[in-house]
Amino acid sequence: MLKGLAITPPVLGRISIGRVVEKNGKRLPEKDDQFTITSQVQSKDGWLLHPLNDELRQGMDDKLRSIPVRLLFNEPQLNFRADYTLFDRQSGRPICLGNGETCKRVTQDGMQSLPCPSPDACPLAKGGACKPYGRLNVVIGDDDPLGSFVFRTTGLNSIRALAARLHYFQALSGNRLACLPLELRLRGKSTRQSHGTPIFYVDLALRNGMGLEAALLAARQLDEERQAAGFDQAALDAAARQDLGNGAFEDNDEDSAAITEEFFPPQDDSPRPPDTAATASPTLAAKLEAQAQRHATPPQTTERRPTPQRAKRA
Image 1 (cartoon, helix red, strand yellow):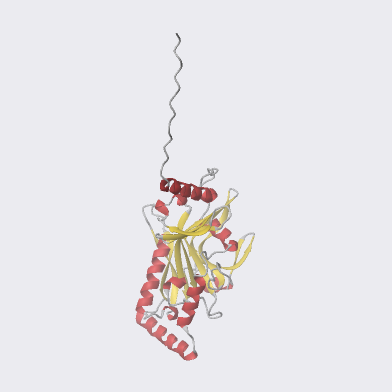
Image 2: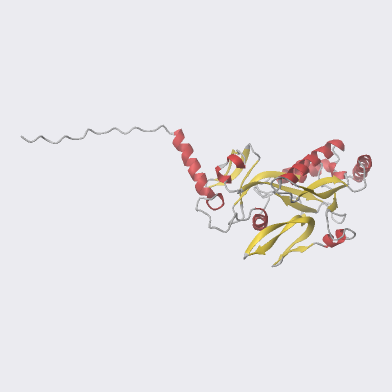
């Protein structure tokens, strides 16, 4: 296996609650009030729709606000990974990934493990360059049991809801998270900052019309059927854990450009100063390293030579 390359779950398409539109000659993200399922093929007009997008919209008044899904793994962190992530907005490549305690950062000396003070206290994260960034892989349909659709988000509401639901459902089901009949559900809320305008986020729930007891019985039955057929869920989780840990960053160069365009757009139309985090992170890193060296080296005192006095005139 190639070292340094994170092996992620196979992806068949994308799930989003927004799109990228062109305004005043710039491509900017725009939020939506429904799900959109796209393929991995992109044209000049955007991502091509996946056939499931139209199939699931039938009978929903053309608003796709819930998607029936299953999960690949019993371990929540394998299905949903969330980190503080800093992307270079010019190249689209990830620079730093942390969890609030430690981070892996690309520096002039290569990949390094460093303390992570979180975006609020990190000098590299100024201007919103570093955000919470989550990736959820789900299975839609029965055509490919190991093929997934990925939902990416930088929204704290979605990250909190998905992380909590995954841990709760794992506990309630007796570690049968991959067997539960679930659905992605779009929810809305208003905050003071939104001035009454609804903010939509993604939540994970039991499938519509199914109670908790019925869902738990269905999960137990599916788990028993899989074990009888030789399906080894524990081995699958172990393989995924090893593959994801093989590299520091999940997103490759091909995906990073689209990710930065959707989640890390330029803040305004004014030209960026030369010391912004996105354009000069190596310089900032070098400054921080030089500052640390200065603090570690005791200051040197310079001996002054006596100033020669002029000879007095007779």
